[in-house]
Length: 335
Length: 202
Image (cartoon, rainbow over all chains, first blue to last red):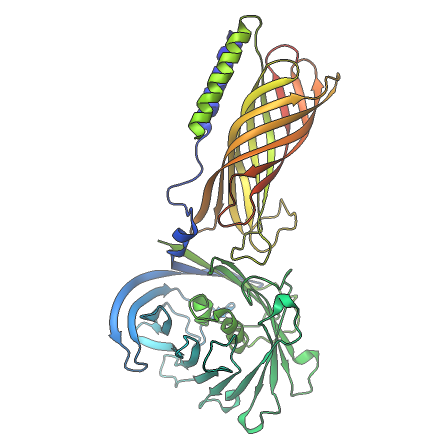
C-alpha cells in the first residue's frame, strides 16, 4: 500500500503541475489577430560600427472628420508615433534630421493612408502624400523633404503612376513619371516591364524597371531588377516578400562596378508584416526611412512599391551580398 | 473534456491498482526524459509565415505495471526552450528561430513491452495528449489548445532491477485540428532519459 500512496501522490502532483501555458491575452483566432493594430515599431540597426535600437511608440490614434484642402479626401483617422533620433549609423531620415520626431499618419474614410508628416518639434521636415484612382490603386506620390535650420527644400518629387488599363485593376503599373524641379537628374520615366518568361510560381511579377530621361526614353539610365537576394525560396505567398534588387547603370561603362545590390526579407502573417530586414551591399550605405516601410500592408500593392522605393531611396553603392550590416524593423501589434 | 479524461484515468488506475493490491504490490515506475518536439509548419505558399515550431521539453511520467508487458500511466511534458521558424527551418533545431515557442503535452499513456531480454527491451507506447502550443511573436502570442493522439516506439537498456536508460523513443501525434496560424496538424517527437522502477522486477 506504500506504493499505492506513492502513485496517488505522483498522480496528484502531475495533475497539479499540468497547468496551462496559454494566457487569456493570447491570440487564439485569425479574427482576433485581424483586429490588431500597429502599436509601435522598433528600428534595430546592427552594423560594423555598432548597434542601436529606436522604438517608435504610439502617441495617439484619433478619430477625425476633416476634408483635406489639398486632396479633397475625407480624413477620418490620425495616428501619431513618437520616433527617437535614429542616429547616423545606417537608418536615417531622408532630411538627415537626427532629432526626436513625430510621425503623423492620416487615413481617409476607406482606410487608405493619404499623408505622412514628419515633424521635428514644430517644423515639418518631411511630407509624403498618397493619391489613389477610382480603383483604389496608388496613383500619385508627392514627396517633400524640407530640412530645418533654414535650409531650402531639397527634394520635391511628384510621381504619377500610370496603369495599363483604366477599367480594371491591373496587376502592376506600366510606368511612373517623376517630376523633380529641384534636381533635374531625377526627373524622368520609370517603365515597368512585366515578367513574360518567369516560372509559374513567379507569375504576376515584374521583369525589370528602367529609368530614362524624358528627352530620350529609348536610352535608359539604369534598370532595376528583382532577384532572389539570397532567399531560399522566391515563390512566397506574398509577392516581393523576400528578395533583392539590383540597380544596373547603363551609363558610365556598365560592368559589375555599376551593379548595386540590396536585399530584404519580410516576415508576413495574415497580411501583417511582423518584421522587415534590409541588407545593402556596402557598409557605407545609408538606409533612408520611407513611409512604405510602415505602410506597405495598408497600401494596395504596397510590397511592390516598397521594393521600388527601397532602391530609389537607399542609394546603395555596393555590388555584393557580403556585407552583414542589417537594419531590422519589428512591428508590434496589439488590441 | 481533459478533466473528464483525468478523472476517468484516475479511477481506472485506482481500481486496477486496488484490485491488484489484493494480491501483490503494484509495480510503479517514474520517468524523466528530455523530449524534443517538432511541429512542421507550412511551405512558402501560405498566408502565414510559420515554417516550423521546435521545442525541447522536460517530460515526467509515471506508470503502473499491470503485468510484465503492459503498463498504464500519465505523462506531462513542458518546454524549457523552443523556437518558431518563420523564414526557414531546414532542421536547424538548435539554431535560434525568429520567435519563441512553447508546447505542453499531458495525458494518459499505455506502454507495451515487446521483449523481455536481459538488457535491451523494446517497447511501444500509445498515448493521448491534451496539447497546448504557443508561439511568442514579441508583441503578441499565438496560442491554441488541441487534443492529440499518437504513438511511439522505443528501446530501453536495463541497469539492475530499478534503473533503465531510455536510449531513444520516437513518435508521432496527430492533432485534432490544424494550428490556425500554421497549416499542419501533427507533431513528431523524440525522447531520451531514464526510468526508475520503484517496485520489484520490471
